[in-house]
Image (cartoon, rainbow, N blue to C red; front, side, top):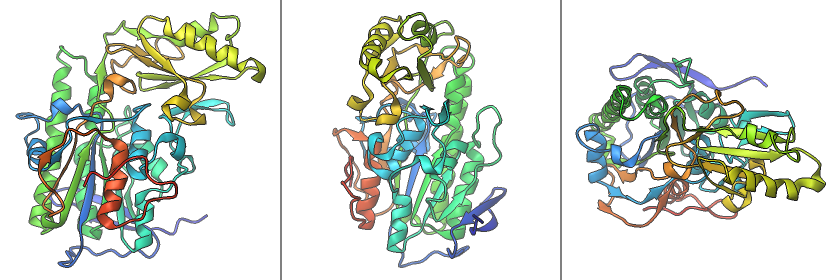
Amino acid sequence: MMDRRTFLRVSAAGGAGVVLSAAPGAPWASGRVAAAKGPRVYVLVLDGCRPEEIARPLMPRLSALRDGGMHWPNAWALPVMETIPNHVMMMTGVRPDRSGVPANAIYDPAEGVVRDLDRPDDLGFPTVLRRLRGLGLTTGSVLSKEYLYGIFGDQATYRWEPEPIVPASGHAPDAFTTDALLAMVEASDPDLVFVSLGDCDRAGHADITGTTLEAFRRAALVDTDAQVGRFVDFLHESGRWDSSVLIVLADHSMDWSLPWALVNLREVVDSDPLLASKVQIALNAGGADLLYWTGHAAQRNRAVARMHDLVRAVPGVLTTRAPRRQRLGNRAGDVVAYVRPGWRFSDPEVWSNPIPGSHGHPATAPIPFFVSGGSELVRPGVSRELARTVDVAPTVGRIFGLRKPSGGYDGRSRL
């Protein structure tokens, strides 16, 4: 089918030219600031940021936003606590068993391979990006990672395809992502914009705490803070601040392992006569493995019990769970395994995951979460309630008067 989206090349304030696309019939309105326009909501995801990292002097702009808004110090990502499913939960307000997106990587029996969940048809639940369009509102997506751009497809009215891409990481640096954000807001002024900044995460994967590489992580935090500051300054200068609500959070935090602190489950299952050659393993960012029984159905219960027993006994493994108990859905296989803090999974081979930074396990569940901005909807304070990534969509829905989806939300509004 021919793509009927329209394209516009614009220049960000102080940045380079950016190519944006729009849904058929969506207007471009460069320079327009509607005085009577209602609230503008910007969801800013600091991919892989730990809550304690938002502090002065490294991140003064984000610290000021947090301190001037409503802050939830007790905030968590949800299992498998991964990049893709937590972004999906933000925009759907439902858990993975309802959205169909349980992890970054799954074993796909139809294709017989382990693959990323990065296609539009992998997403099986409507997002607020699309649902708000039914109210005559416009939405935008500015997502730094290729696979996020892939799974959200044309959900938003306006979108940016990440570029330039860092070949080793598959993401666009935060400076370019912010250029795209500024250009999109200037050119189309969406009611809701969903933004993911990826530098903290990618620097985090390379970081080895306590060595000179820690400086790389700190530099990424400083730059990400500066990019958020650029956007806040733009909102003030363009007259949008007083109608703005900024929902700032992370999709997960980050843990680090020593080079030798790794767990390989492929060797464990292949050494067992019952399981050998009948188990597929999907590695998820070093912190979680999903195990799938591919043998005869009559042996499934016995095999799954054996997987739990064997894997839990492996040094470095924290625990195993049944995916249904984690509300991950059928696509998450038969067993989900989590590593202990300071360890990482490496499958299918021991050399498959040399990166010390990892996430997807309980150690990386705590995240920053706060709501700030100049809108009268923002009431400064600190709440001790538990906030979660799944709360973003209900919050957005309440701001715009959007009805709950079929079956309701699994999260709740934070306003």
